[in-house]
Each structure stands twice: as C-alpha cells, then as structure tokens.
Length: 402
Image (cartoon, rainbow, N blue to C red; front, side, top):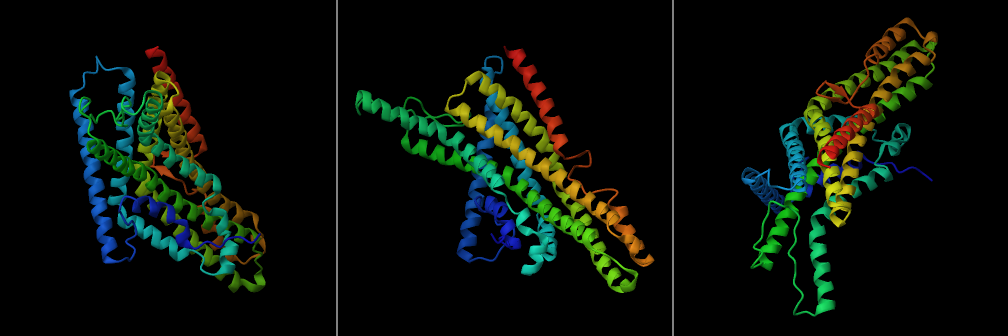
C-alpha cells in the first residue's frame, strides 16, 4: 500500500480545530468578514461564560464551611480547581506566546519537504497522527463530554422510567446538572433556566477541555516535526559515503545538514521557552487530579459519573504520557544524529569534511530535550516517577479518610 504523503497543514488540523471550536483562529487564516465576526462573537461569549463560572466557583469556596462539608464534595471542588488552573494557564500561555508559536509554525513550514520524492525520503507518514493517538484524543473529549452530559442523561432516564411505571402525570424531571457550585431552584425548577444553565456548563467545559488539550497538541505537533527532521538527518548522514575524490560535493552536502541541524536546535530552544511553564504546571496538576479523582471515585463508587471520571483520569494520564513520550523521542533522535555522524565512513573524507562533521558531533553531545523550565527533562522515566509519587500520595489520602 502506497504511503499517504501528508502536507504540512495536515499535521496541524487537530490543534487548530481545538482552538477554532472556541471561536479562536490560532493562525489567523484568511476567511470571510462574516465568519470572522461570528468567530469573535462566539470567542468573547465563551470567555464571558467561562469567567462567570469561575467567579461563582470561587464565591462558593469562600462561603463553604469545610468542617461540615463531605470529603467527596471537597475532592470534587479540588478536581475542578486544579483543572481550571491548568486549562486557563495553558490558554494564557498560548495568548502570551502567540507570535512565537506562529513564528515556530512558519519556520517549520519552511523546512517541510515540498516535493513527493522528498516526502518519501522524510517518511512523513511515520510522524503523522497515529490511529492510537487519534483514539486517545477522541476518548479525552468523549470522557469530558460524558461527565458533563451524564447528569442530563440520568435525568432523562429517570423521567422515562417513572413515566413507564407511574404514568406521565406522576413522572418528574430531576433537573440534574454537573457542576456542584451551580444551584437551581429546587422548589420551582424552570426548564428555560435549566437549558440555559446546561448550555453555560457546556461552554465552560468547552473552554477548559480545548484549552487543556489544544496547547499540548501544538507542542506535540512541533516536537513531532523536529523528530522527523532529526530522523532524516541521521538516516541521510549514516547512509552517505564521502570520498576525498569529491571533496567539494561532500562539503556542500554536509554544510546543508549542519545548517539544518543548527536551525532545528534553535527551534527546540524556542519551543522550550514557549511551553516550559505549562509543562511544569501540567506535571503538578495531573498528579493532583489523579489523587483527587481517585479519592472521589473511591468514595462515590463506579456509577455513571464514576465511570466517566475513571475514563477521564485515564485519558489525562495518557495525555501526560504522550508528552513524556515525545520528550524522550526527540532526545533519542537528536542523539541518533551524533551516532550517525560517528558511524558513517567519515574516515574516507577530506579534512574539511571532518571539521564540519565535528560541529554536528559536538552539538549532539547535548541532545535536544523537552524541558519543564530547565528543571526537568521529560521522558518516559519522568512519567513513571511522577505516577509512582502520585500513587503514594493517593494511598496516603485513602488511608487518612478510611
């Protein structure tokens, strides 16, 4: 089966779509004036609703008596607060570094192979969104939707059940909804108010979920592109056979790779400067959500809400693993460039070629890495250590409340 030769824009449709669903055009693509106006109106409306819900949550926390509040509700609030902080920080990070993200996008677009033969050499299909990755992202959004829509589905189920067993006159709609800090009039429930509340909760969730996943998708796209280029440089260099008889051609070939390698290392540094703050916060908040959601499920049991929370925490952990995996991948492939430089037949080349080759070998001594503000390089080992610490904290909390 012939490989699909994806274009550069094909790689970025996921992060662009995540922000477009909030009405935000991340790359400022050309569109009609009416569409741009509608997107801006929806974007502002989502922002107002999200801010309003955050203010209500803060107010409920202010007036809450923690001594009289059940631990499960406290865990629920802790989960919401942690997720809000993570999501809002990521969206602010994107707004703050928007020009830098657009610049990295443009620089990678310049490096992307344009012709069919070059795309075959780069093996672009190898670094496209895999089926497992697409399933993971779908599960993440699906679990988030299930958590928010679960109370509505439960209300509808109970209403239909009562209608069938007791008749329409005795069946009552429960008006259940997701967020505990939003209260409805229990004595005189309003269908219009319920619909408005549910729409607001959906928009509030839309902003959080898409902001949380959207920024990570941008980072994964950028790092994936760098991995593709490092892999190409390593394979090309390893297969090349220099000879003193064609010194000029050898030096031109290597000079192109040296410049390309330098540009990739510069882009990686810029990526770390953009995403470093959100990465370290992502590590902390994911560990926090793991503990709070675990305790909440332990207390509430595996009902519909518990199952949706269980799926959600699984996808949140998988999201963190994805970032750590790409962190290890870029370190491995940038190291591979240095190994390829050493293992190919450089000893048959001229002195000029060897001096240029030394530049790549020296730069590869310090491989590219995905770093959380310079404190921690992300890798699969980092993920294992974080999950180990998180589980020990969860076990401690579980012991304290039992």
